[in-house]
Amino acid sequence: MSTTPEASARALFTELTGAEPAGVWSSPGRVNLIGEHTDYNDGFVFPFAIEHRTFVALGTRADDRIRVASTFDSEVVEVALSDLVFPALRDEVPEWATYPLGVAWALLQGRDAVTTGVDLAIASDVPVGAGLSSSAAIEGAVASALNDTWGLGLDRVALAQIGRTAENEAVGAPTGIMDQMTSMLGRADAAIFLDCRSLDAEVVDLGFAAAGLELLVIDTQVKHSHSTGGYRERRASCELGASTMGVPALRDLTVDDLPRAEELLDDVTFRRVRHVVTEDQRVLDTVRTLREQGPEAIGDLLVASHASMRDDFEISVPELDTAVEAALSAGAVGARMTGGGFGGAAIALVAHDRAEAVRDAVTSAFTASGFHAPHIFTVTPSEGARRDS
Image (tube, rainbow, N blue to C red; front, top):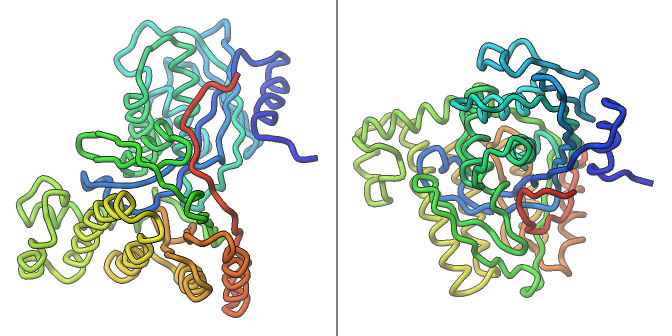
């Protein structure tokens, strides 16, 4: 019999402390329907939270120390709250521990009143390295747990900002805020239309079930990491493009500005800029199309997004391209890679009665190409961070 991640977090906490936790909090992973690498360019994104979640069991301590344990690493890490200093601590603890410890550090910045130590036990069923934001799920669960326990009174947007600070400064991954906002604000059967500059967020009904559609995630099993060079290089190119074009961020350019950009920028930088500018427009078009025509009509936008990431932003890999091509050949409404790229997952929007055919086609294509078998599963738009008990 399988054990739920919530039960695993509870069991690990009891193993760690000999006691029951004071509470359990959780936060979801996410799938980005469209809008890739637009978030750190102050642009638009359209993600939704999924049912796969990270759980944190927490109990307070009599001292001022924080201790973290997880089911995905045997090492238990313990640090005095006063010694939580990032990025200095980054190389002193396992990488996974920088996420919960980084959240605690970010929450403590400018706050002298917090003295309660805590024990944290973490378990998750969000696939790691698949582009489904396992990191933001950890950050959202830990931030929610510590916010409640320490009585900080921060709202969900502030907690998302805490998660981004942890990821950027403690972990050292230069990501935007999309993942954390989705993990905090997710709603069942809906996506979050997010303006990453203003942080204005609008819940938009997706209507997949009513239209007889489901969303398949095709995890290629090719692992990626946002803290490695490719992601940094793409972000640097975007910043160079914005600076050369004389705007604060690529969000401030439109498709009409692309001919001038092509004149001013080198070829690589121009293609990076073109992806972000056209992807922003595709997000706006997707939201409008959903409202006016329904989810069956957004397929071409998903396909165009993948082509842009493959050709202009150059963040796809052969496994992702194969997944998208096979899904479309088997009748998917639309398909694209999702997440930061260089591995991870693709998504395919499919009719219920075509789902099995799409799964079979993708699996067969991977076998024919000599790739490791993909992990294919359906995701359902779900709610954001919460206290479970």
